[in-house]
Length: 546
Image (cartoon, rainbow, N blue to C red):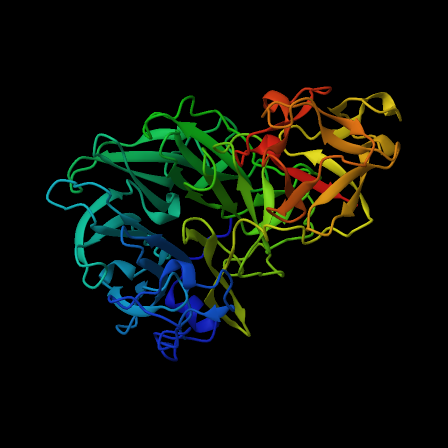
């Protein structure tokens, strides 16, 4: 990972602070309709907005959260009027289309370096703090080698307007020259206690480890416990981000530098405090073809669509399975329908930083926040503007185009199941009517290629290139479990193809509304292809490759 103290010397090198502190559309009130409170109805908001600067200042390490009424609060580490570094707090009442500065976190804590701030809203009371209290924290002292680092917590009970010191999560036991404390991350658990995860360099047995402390009042914190402390001394797990789906476990993403190139990893916890064996590296989120993020990952969750909702992941740089920077670097978000397990797929990032590289600025620890019921995502990402590092923001769609955009009438495609990585295949390459359709190892045969035959109503038939016959639901087509086989195309099933990501589609039967599905969500080669009630899960998501 790259850590810069985000100190005044760095700001000066990047061109200094200046300009309108609101910036980035802060004064833009040109909207088609407004609610009584000044906000914009969700249904009237555009899915996509232009990329705009978030104010005129330099800024780093953006964070964004949505309050219960939909108001968005965003924070960046930035120079304050005092000349120190602190947190600039902005508010949006229109779903992330415009922002206005509403508060600042500014104090002597920034002397000697400030980095890696976080922003959190308490969903439940904590000690004397009511539900809805905002918390802000950061790593302090990174540029003072002779003094210990600390992680202070500031609180606001008026939606970010005013802030007061609450406590120190931890003050290091040794000076910065012998180890630092980095990247605080909060999560409030079901029992009401608050957890702070952070990266710790002060244990002489580890180059770095992830630890956690707990409080029941926001003032007194427990001793630390190891969350990810790996056996190789050189391993450096860090930059934890924790999210939870309503019915699922807590999910933590983090990077492992030193031994795994700062690749993103993922762990789960049933209660948010007990994460299992601290020497477990967890899962490495990847796409079908092995694309994965490295450096500075952040995680987001939306409860819609589907029973599981969606997890969304972004990282600074995108690599292929061979460890080489690949297409989509700095320009994609990864999505997952299975609670973080299984394969992920790509959706476009609203703020592309296509020249992202291992540096403290471009696309470093970007913030992503699903908005408008998960239809769109707000992204805040930093990138260079000349020699200045500035945050930018934009909204973009999270669920694709919902139609056949990206597919060409008459073109043929290989359809790969997201759940398994296997291809839709006519069994044994048969050319006879009634031959079953299954998933099978992708082999390039015509039995695994299907031509798009668009119909006047916008639906399509899926014509197997090897046989000239169409993928069809047979038996009682109204049965959610109806088998799919090839039949003559006259009268064959028509499918509504809906784009859900970058090259990924769902195919819904035009007559029944059921979706093309891998039976039982099987990851086994040879598993049957059927139609099933549409559920927005990975057994019904297909990558179409020309």
